[in-house]
Length: 388
Image (cartoon, rainbow, N blue to C red; front, side):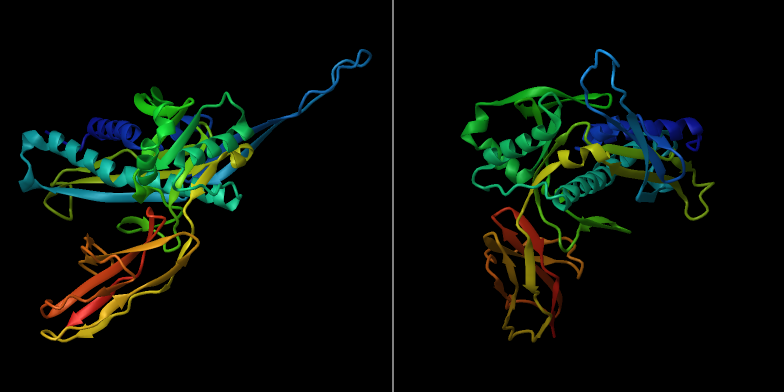
């Protein structure tokens, strides 16, 4: 059977779009992009409509003329992301190509594409709220009050008949559920996301969408191997916006599929996945997005590299930081200078960590997470301990 068919490519693309809608916390914003128009590879026009208010009716001259202003604003899409995936011929037989390929591509979208898109969208919306000073100073011990405060700020901008959505950090969501106030008011309601209807918790008609902490930062860097929080990133505790408050524009290229005979690089099936996407907010909705973000944490002293002798190891690593919030610490061991495969070190919860005395010759990597208010964290740089 030929896997490199137009039908297969379109089918995979369609199914991946459906999975995106089901798994993405921000995927419903793409429902607001129906009025957009592409004018170039990365340029999209989104109309912004403005009206004049009512005027007095004059019995002699009649109606006062008013203008309808439609400003077609051009936005440039920033995120042009892609990856080429290969499945070795020996890993699959002819009859299992479609099934295995579908599972692999679906898992790729679920574990890599959706998290990146959510992180980008939420960081951009939170960044907008911070830039425009649309933030509140909440109390971590009273998350319910903070949520109501954010909802009130948004409703003061858009009114009380607009459908709102609250994105809530996973730590704060747990705190919310332990709140005595919310347990009496929370309900389960339908939430429309594309062609998918989800069951979500809501309060006063506002859908509450919990999002894992890794996707709730104010800034990220996007590179050749996915994304990671920027050095100056702060935790987004909560973000409230109208459901129609942003446009997620996705321009997905059809999946390109090549058989081993067509793949000149390897004896493998090759799948090319490419995605243009970005999120935009109409000018009229800039002040309808409100957030509660963690206090800023600044690491003033990072741990430094150390060289020690096997059998007589001594010394420690230390980190120093400042913040308006309450700081705590957790040290991690990792597998390289980039912090990969990080594992918590039991009991290493102060600003300094004693280097383990039983290390054998080689290189070891450590970093500290500086945590504010017991929730948000900023990682120090990675220190290399060389055991000679």
